[in-house]
Amino acid sequence: MKAGFARNIAKEWVMQHGNKVEGFVGAYFAGSIVEMQEEDELPRFSDIDIMVVVLTDEAPFKLGKFVYNNVLLEVTFLSWNQLSSVENVLVSHHLANSLRSDTIFTDPTGCIHKIQAEVSQHFAERKWVRRRCENVRNSIENSLKRYDTSVSYHELVTTWLFPTGITTHVLLLAALRNPTVRRRYIAVREVLLEYGHADFYEKLLALLGCAHLTPKRVEEHLDELAKTFDAAAIVAKTPFFFSTDITPIARPIVIEGSRELIKSGYHREAIFWMAATFSRCHKIFEADAPLELQQVYAPSFINLMSDLGFNSTEDFTRRVEEVLRFLPSLWDVTEDILSYRKLRPIR
Image (cartoon, rainbow, N blue to C red):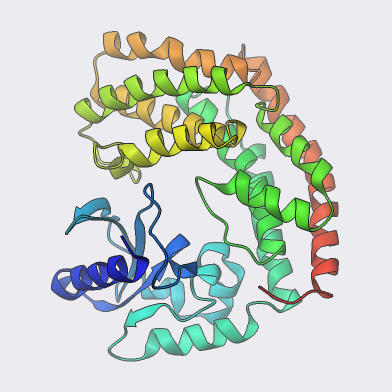
C-alpha cells in the first residue's frame, strides 16, 4: 500500500469519527509516516500515528492501535494545554519532532498551524536541540535514581529498560533524527556511523546487555515471546496505556517485525522491543491472569533477562548504576554531534 493512500484513509477516520470527540481542535500525523513520500510503500509492519488535539485540561485515554479500512492506525489524544506554549513543544522531543514539519491535516481554527510555524522556525536552533537532549538525559537520570527493587519482576525490568533504551534518543535528537520507538537502535547506529562514532554503538548494545547474542539465540527468545504474547492477548481485560500493543492486530508489528529484523542482520537491535513486550505481557498476566498462568510463562521472560545479564536483584542495582556512570560519555558524544552538525546541512 502506498503511503499517500494510507494517509488518506487515516484522514477519513478523523473526519468521520475523530472530530466527534468532545473539544476537538484538529489532528496531525506523527511518527515514521511523516518522512514518507506519497508513492513510498508503507512498510508491512508499520502503523500510522495520528495525534488528535482536544480542548480539555487532560487528554482522553489513548485509543491506541486499531484497523480502519485495512490500515493499522494508532490514535493518541493531546490536550491543547500540551501545545499552547511554543517553548513547551520545543523542549519536548516527541512533540517537537512531530511538529517540525507541517503534517496537520485538519485545523479549523488555525491554532495548531500557528504553533507549528513557530516550532518549525526554531526547531533546529542549537539552544532548543540542546534543551531537548538535556531533558532526555535528565529523564534517564531521574528515573534511575528512583529505582525501587521492591516492585514486581516485570516492573523491575521496565524501570531499568526504558531509561536504558532512551540513551539512543539523546543521540538521535542531537542529529535532528526521529526518536523512533521500535527501531531506535538501528536509527542510532546510522547516526553514529555518520558522525564518526561507530565504536560507541557497541557500548550502547553492551549497556543493554545484548552485544554478545547470536541470531539463533534471539530467534529462540522471539519464539517464546510469541507464545507469551498470544496468551496475554487472550486474557487481557484491564486497560493500560499500551493495551492495544498486545492484541492480535498488533501482533505482526512486534513478532513478525522483530523476525524481519533478525533476518536482516539486526538481531541485537530487536532485543529492546522484545524485552519491553515481555514486560508488558507479564503486567497483563499480573492484572488479569491466574497465578498458574503467570508461572507458565515466567521462565521464558527470565531466560531472556538472564541472557542480558540479570540473574539476581543485585544485578538490576548494578546495571542501574552502570547506566548512570555511562551518562557522561553519552553526553560527550552528544556534544560532538551537536558541534559537528553545525558544519553539515540539516536533513
